[in-house]
Amino acid sequence: MNRTLFSAALAALAVVFTAIPALSAPSHEQNMAYVAALYRDVLQRSPGYDGLAAWVPGLDSGSKSRVDVAREFIKSDEYRRLRVRDMFSAYMHRGMTDADLANFVRNGGSLRSLRVSLLASQEYFSLHGSNARGWLNGLFRDMLGRSPGYGGVETWVQQINQGKNRTEIVNEIYGSPEALGRIVDSLYGAFLKRAADPSGKAQNVQAMQRGTTEEDIAVGLLTTAEYYNRNQTGNGVVGPPFGFGGGNNPGNYGLQQGDAAQFVNQNVPNGMIAGQTYYVSVSMRNTGRTQWDPNSYALNVYPDGTPTWSTIAIPMPAPVNPGNAVTFTFNVIAPQSPGTYDFRWQLRRAGFGFFGDVTQDLSVTVSAGRTY
Image (cartoon, rainbow, N blue to C red; front, top):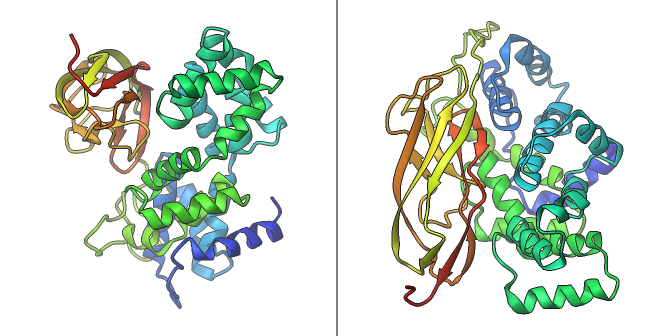
């Protein structure tokens, strides 16, 4: 998207996002806090001295706006690589190869095009039994977090039998308010660290139905007053994630994340009764270079901000050294509405974001009555 088109897109989003209040001269420390937050939330790492030096002077001088900087972060190869990796893990249950990344770039490189191409691919079709019903069940689970139901499956199967291809079906489901709402929820969780409010969610979904991209929504959220203010010092909400030096000294930014995690096992019922409480456990192994500190690490529901199981985060029970495993034991409450729901979790480090394996795919059937 060129600069003119992007500016027009942001103008169209004016009704969706709260404008950044006019700040005649943001301080050097405020600009450092904002850039550090972008590194943490977008690229999932600390900026280092070079990272600050690349962006803070432009913000200090006024030659770059926060919209300019946020757009460059979202357009960066590093961010795109992270999103490609996450989608291959979530949809294809494998790591990303260099060929996968090259194919993403060659096909236009938008997040929507990647989702559609993966979910309509022969590889994804094969992962779900190489038949239309299995593929549709997987598609609904990954895009909507639920099963299509018998009637829904048969309707789509009939359309496939009449010649409708998988790409058309994925695009149709992607464009639904339900699917777009889940994408908006995930972006709010990743950047604003909260669930989307009903009004903001509805307006962003409408914007996406008119052609606004996932990338545009991300830039819009990263340039809201809410995002900017919550990452400043002294606001009583969330301070900057790293220590800042005074004046033009950026301080010590040598911290490296070094986090990695391997899924070990989980003990979760395959069937539950709506509204009932169940005891579950999830085990993960520390395969990184850093100790998991209970004050900074937790097991979070995946995707972020989706409280399907009545809780979002489970604290680390004790410090976990590299090479060791930890078991999280906790209670969940089954959703009130019968249906099939994903049970997926991933580790998260405060100030950095998600890392490591997502727990093994598990679809839990929630029923209205007693099961035997």
